Amino acid sequence: MNELQDIIKKNQQMWEEKVEAGEHYSIPDFDLDVDLLKQFADGELLGWSEKKGKNNNPLLKKIRQYEYANIKGKKVLCLASGGGQQSAMFSLLGADVTVVDISQGQLDADIKAANHYGYTVKIILCSMTDLSAFEDDYFDIVHQPISICFVPDVALVYKEVFRVLKTGGKYHVDHINPATHPVSFENDMGDGWDGVGFRIASPYVGGSLRIDEKGNENMVSGEVDGEFRHLFIDIFCKLTEAGFQIKYIWEDERNLVTAFNTLGEIKPSDGEYDSSFSVVQRYINVLSVK
Image (cartoon, rainbow, N blue to C red; front, side, top):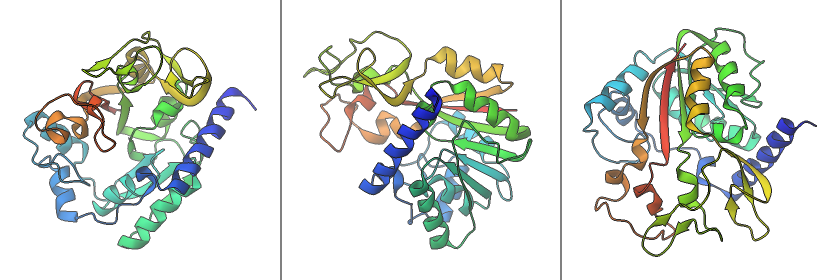
């Protein structure tokens, strides 16, 4: 088994364990309101599954309207996106949805959501790095939430997405901001919360996230844990090298300070709120066109 297959197997096992543990990523969304979804797609609301208030950013509204324009009847691939959440959103907006994931448990959640709402969804158990189940120029939209962090090279995914998208098709992919990792680490190098703020002590390098002998996550030593830190040169340049035209890049509205912490204060994590969200924008969204 080669290195990539080892990584896929490791992550497949991890996600099946998350499903078994009832992680929130694996719980289908049974409480979606179609009217609110339409408002989200029109750029009026910040969130589509949680009420985070009105969207007051005119550019974000423009992006949302562009991304979801004429969505009804479009062929949408929810890539590495099992769990019955994104597929439910697109399906309830009228799209023809296919979900790809390496976890059968995740895909089962998409079936549960479809049965709950009464629509049909197609599921494919495969890696995001191998979309050979699909013909060229097939999808109108590929939507990929935070998941590309589980492959060592984003180009492997970009190449496949470009192939299966129609000319003029849209590719929305979410990335973890590479500056996020050290503020989220707690290790002997001095990363993470120090009682006043969040320190960054680790070197700024891309590559595998690792778990040391004490169980601490870092970028330097220990066993590879199946997740990867992608740097901006890879995130953006490999996208254009694959043939995409980048249309929009923006901070993920889920992690805006106003959405989670209205006071804008820095405080230690308490199990319910991760205040590193207030220090480093954790996720970035990229919307490209073939």
